[in-house]
Length: 209
Image 1: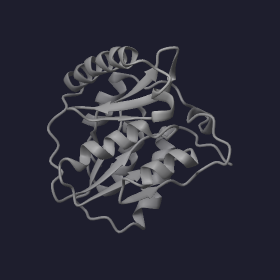
Image 2: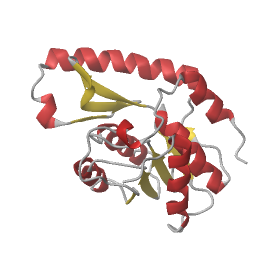
Image 3: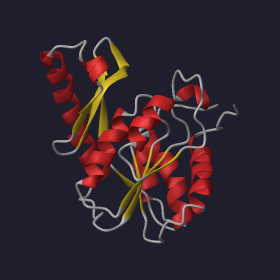
């Protein structure tokens, strides 16, 4: 299966797939920081709008930070991966959640995050890929609380089981590539460098054209 060159190219592929979805012109495009914001920029351009950011944080297993036992979003939103979370004590999970909530608050300040106005609108949630799907599931939950007309999830690549979990929550899912063998999101990109806060801030400030 062909690799994406980078997140921007992956975002353009998503945008091409979304063109046929018949979404309205006032669609709201939200990226999940950090990498999802880069993809979301390319999707937003196709609608002539700026992307926004929906702040979420993965809750990583202490000994394996890349393995998510759940995820949180601003407010009280949390989802857990029961199979993985069952391996941890409540104390371990609470310590990770507390640390990640502090990081959410820091990013909200750094990015100038504002209250989202999603009521009655179509929302497209974009990330650079789904491994466990935990962050996207909590993002769908958080956006639903604002009473949008529809929630569309758009990701360039995903593990099949994670995509199925997200599809149960979203109104529509767009994912061009669902590999049979999936180990990580990064393996499906030629360039997958860590995205910085400065890059996110710059992308969020770019004009829509």
